[in-house]
Length: 206
Image 1 (cartoon, rainbow, N blue to C red):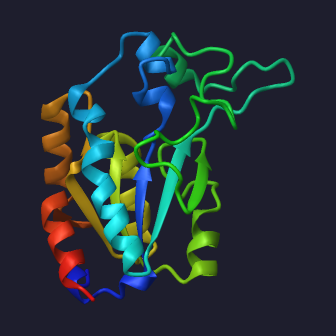
Image 2 (spheres, helix red, strand yellow):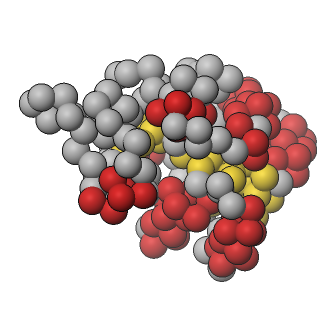
């Protein structure tokens, strides 16, 4: 793994995973079902200064957003394991172009939006195409959940020889113990830094 302070920030993107209304907004799918976490709710405001600082230095912000593709009748195509875990998900939830599928206001708009249908932001998405087209080599990653979409994306990046920084307090899970255990396990595939540490690095780079 390369030393992040040596990265070319014009070839770096901040990538957030699933920070969208259906997960975070009170009127989103999870909010209506009473599925809420203070640690998750705090992420957009914590990440926003990093987005601004990176953009000022020529970098980019990419939002990867979980999407449930609707069938001809508008019913979401939900994997069996997800339906079992989240039986409250239904018609209109995480639908393309919907309020729930949209990035939260605190971070809106992203430079690029990637719709994803599974945990990893790389799996069957246009993320790699965007990275090649824009000239992005390195990623700063945050979002939800640490043990799900964030971990899967970081491991996929590692397999592709893409250097990453994981925002240790810029990601969260519904269980803090799971979050901490995942940070420990990801230490072999990514550099781990706090949002404050990353912001200080960005602001020192001209």
